[in-house]
Figure 1: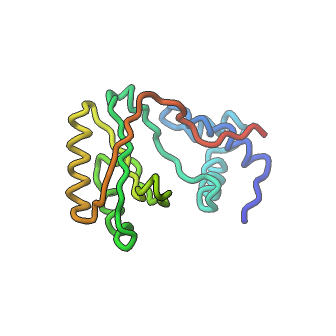
Figure 2: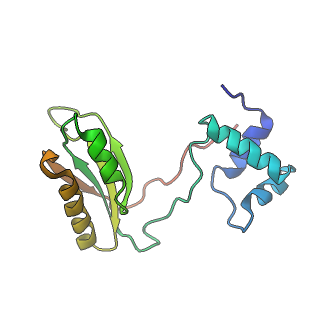
Length: 160
């Protein structure tokens, strides 16, 4: 297991709210911390390989991009086919998140979650129908939880 030192923690604090929006964001972070770009990138790569940094990626604000209809679709899928079908659903270009979650019976029979985004309600409805076609007879039931506003759009934050 990797032990974080003060430099690693400084890199985490400097990047946890997002990388600077510049052509060379790692150089910007390095200059801010008095390090070289190579040191920043090497340490971030090591932390990513150790699972300390889960991923580096863009986190779009769907509302600002015009995607005002966001629905978490939930599906009841037989356990013996959920992994195979979940991979297929997760590969659909309009699915941003796809998870296998435990059921909480009798109130909550759903075990497959897939987030979809659309500019209109009709877009989302068509995406849901496409997921249903992928699931076929394995679809034992579904529901959609539409988002109405963004409550939180951040990951873990370190203060120390």
